[in-house]
Length: 118
Image 1: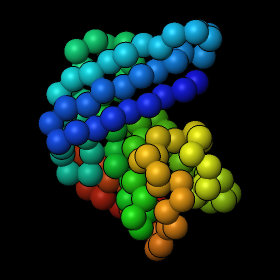
Image 2: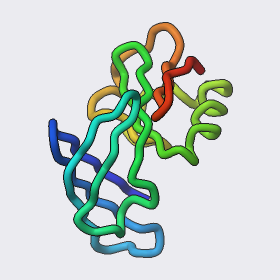
Image 3: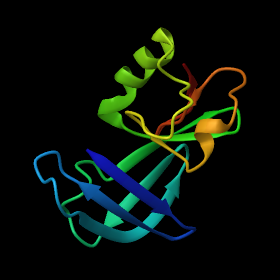
């Protein structure tokens, strides 16, 4: 599966290649609302994101975006050393270019209620 997400100040767009669709992409876009530790994506089309809320993870200067159902897998990837990765392609959405940014400290996981440390 290939996913590209671009985030602006008030809007976003995405390109998504579903696993069983070898040629072609689904495109989505919409308005963006920034909440404490999370981003609310309000899509024009409802096909690309199964969950319209993504959690911002800050790890030093790196930024990841996770859907709520990915949090446990991300925590396990950190525990086993899969993250932080040095490749652009990986299991979790990572800000463009951050695969070469070193991490420092602990990953800070945002949520709609509060931010906690991994």
